[in-house]
Image 1 (cartoon, rainbow, N blue to C red):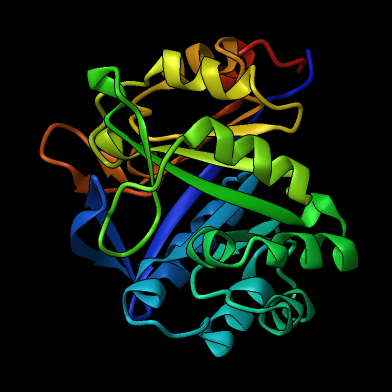
Image 2 (cartoon, rainbow, N blue to C red):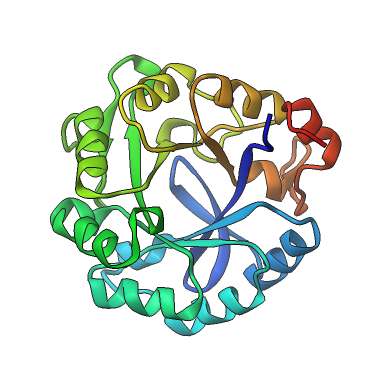
Length: 253
């Protein structure tokens, strides 16, 4: 079995590294540059950087900051937050970002997915899909800064694939930042609905959860709290998986 993709996911707010629970109450936990250096040393597979303040403040990406990140990273970087146009996506790629992750702008203007994919390839486009209510058996798609309901989440991920997205970043909002375990039904439903890879995000607490998510159909797993917190008091400590962990997941050594 090939080594599964395990992606470190970092949230930014006004240039600082933050963590949230269910995307609420963002708490500053440190310098993102330091986190990136540590993930470099630990040879993380990939990095997803999401600027949660960009959408809330209706602004574009912080290109100067992203250029610094991209130049420091030895791993592929996916960036999301404030990408409202093909021009913005093009500038991100020119800075060294490998993939762009789009959510709000893509819902408002689905053609944006198609335009970016047509110029840079589907492999460069990630559609972020935030789902809330899955634990209650009534999962709903939510996408804007006011967290309003916006319809059938499975219909949207199928549409995102048709528009040209190359991956789905599926986040279980109810479990985001909680270290409460994964919703396997949600992952299975998404993975069986599309042919493109699904990245499972939200609730991952250990390597056992990663294996369960992969077994439910996820092509990759993204985690934030797992890699930045340690112990019951959530002390900040940047970590990543070791070779023994990947062996447990079934990867060839």
